[in-house]
Image (cartoon, rainbow, N blue to C red; front, side, top):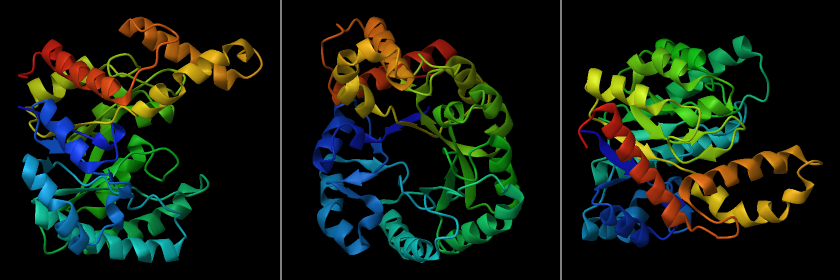
Length: 311
């Protein structure tokens, strides 16, 4: 059975409230990113053990992966890279404290499209990260993300094959592929043999995130193949980017009269109205982040059931 996790900092940055939200869904796992207002990568293992671990233990919450920002830096920013190597050492210790097996990473902002030039540098620096987890049972998960080297399925596979190490795997994010102009189902078919972890978020044709099942990803087809046919029983981490709709819905409604002049506002307004109608929400009614996260959770459960998977 799939284990449902989530970036609960999209509901609140307060870690104890995040734990309460996990348990309210009857779940066990979360993916920590912002913890009590501070990124997880900015904790030392000592700070984490003193301030955060007791709260985890109190609620019986576990980590599916560490949602780190490692690798989300400029490719040639060596100062930032060396700082991240030190942070990664602490994250490895935090994983060992929490029996977490995965750390999410990225493959650097390149600032251009000369990929043949960037490739050897990206591989060398990723191997530098990999060296920090050697001697542990931790796997680095490369997430496809906008504006990094590995933003396409082909370059993700290229990195996977070049690094060729059991402690380096891929994480699949349908929404990020959509925002980069790719068909998410085609991307899934390409990378599924190299992926061990899945982020669950969806995206419209305008590049605006929407509740899962409302975007361009055919999640029923993905889940049927992944869970029913291939027997995947790993983690699916909810990442709905709830803040955009929750924080900006009313603002874009107020600005809708100038959509003819500013297409950016128009596309957001159209998608927010589409969500309103799908969820039965009045155009002037605000919706909190907890509610949107619940939509995501219930949406995933519904899609799994429709795909024929055990839920």
